[in-house]
Image (tube, one colour):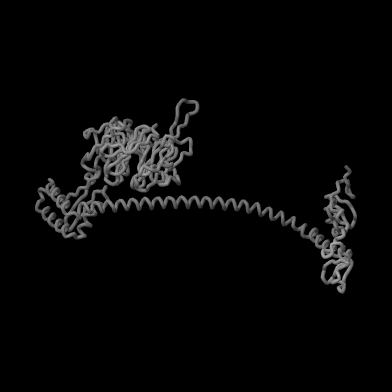
Length: 543
């Protein structure tokens, strides 16, 4: 196959100049365009050379007749049969074609010599600006994403804090209303209260003054004077601080020891014959509770009747594998390590939180009665290289009540979250068998409780379940001391509220009912749940 060569060099022909009648390559074409003498020439692509021969174009009105003339007035070609243009100024069709082509060549020449040349510089400038804009846009986008993430975190935290605060205030108001109704509004209860206080040893030597006080308080109560009721209601506020105040000149005190209870009274015992010794308790109101052993989970009442049974509980760990919401719904870890939800009517069971990370294994779950959030404790086991040992790390993640928007509270911790709880002040409490670790709601460490016998590490200190009461105290099942202990929200040891003298032996699990202030406790190798009343409030008169 023969390829035509350029008329000025040996390269292949790509263009054709109509004025010079030369074949041009790409390089010679550029030189031809920039040369002042030939820059106005008509240069076209070589393969279009054959189309430069004028073709006969047929008239649209008379398809069999070609155009032969061009009307200057109408600026339209016409054939011999078109009679409407005969009185108009006309010219030959070829001459009209050459004139139109010349005008177009002038425009093309201007584009080639001026616009095309200057556009090369504009294009380089635009490309540099595009690259600069791309980097600026990436930086702005990164800042926007960071600001959006910070705003989302702030809004989520504020919403959760406000929700928790409202729930806590509502519970405090409900508690005050109940105490107000029980102690003041009912005259009979108030009279019994006055009688018991009058017979106390501290008031025997002050009978005259106390009688006057009783008469005035009885008079206020019977006549329902609001100032006296409001003063007495102040006794219910700030319960963990020794508080003294006066009502109509009479001084009263509410002591911390009396709030903790001089002794816990055993209210009832519930035997669960269907399960034997069990691992954990989740109370459901004042009359029912979920109890578990290995993979078996049973709903029972205070009569010991079996109401419902589940057999897909994760039973590989001695931990709090199930919990109950404020609406009495059940949340538990199933055998496939997913967090499931069972409605209070026992009819609807769904997956609330699906396991996604294969390295982390959920071992504990807790639903806060204050905020409604769900805390999930997880562990990760890593083998040490070149050794036959393992390291175990713990993590606590907070979810909302729908199982969404996870927030990691404690990550890669050396303390294993076998048992979880949330205090009324927002602190997260976890039990790792050897210590109680408390963090704030953001995961910042507040304190660790290693035992109360000394300031140093107590190697005999072993605990199981933990829970919190409405006074922000923390209750511990001390396995090694055969006791149920209580510490305040700052980690200060308060007292042993149940010991061997009360028949306590190896306490394993514990659950607190925020509505009745009762503690449900189970002892090791025992199939009986013991229910104790925790909070009692006592008033004493002082000089």
